[in-house]
Image (cartoon, rainbow, N blue to C red; front, side, top):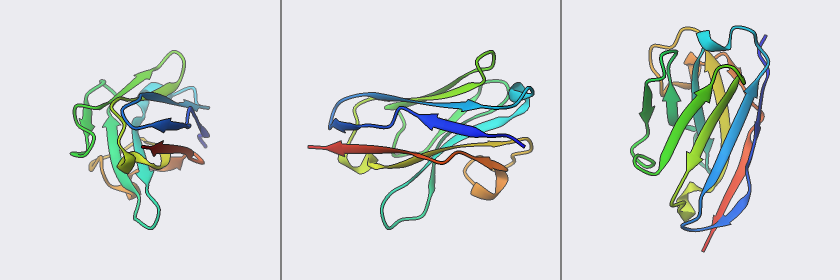
Length: 123
């Protein structure tokens, strides 16, 4: 069983930056495929960014060029650097982990989820 705990959510103004963190409780952290998802009010949860065991990353179209996913295996921590935040980035952000992930944007591929952290962007 892997526990994931997100932090870093906050209320910021449009154009500002924020960094989310997600720390995991596993000794095999480097084996996991990791991702950030978000859920906006009234909408389905969507994939934001994902990173595989070798550090290769993919991004949702709405965040490309603004968000960066990274990880530190030694610290068992996943990050999401969010720059140039927009009103529509307001959501609850979740980190997720899975050992066998074929489709990085599919929720069902991930076995473990954090509780979420709220990001609110205002004008």
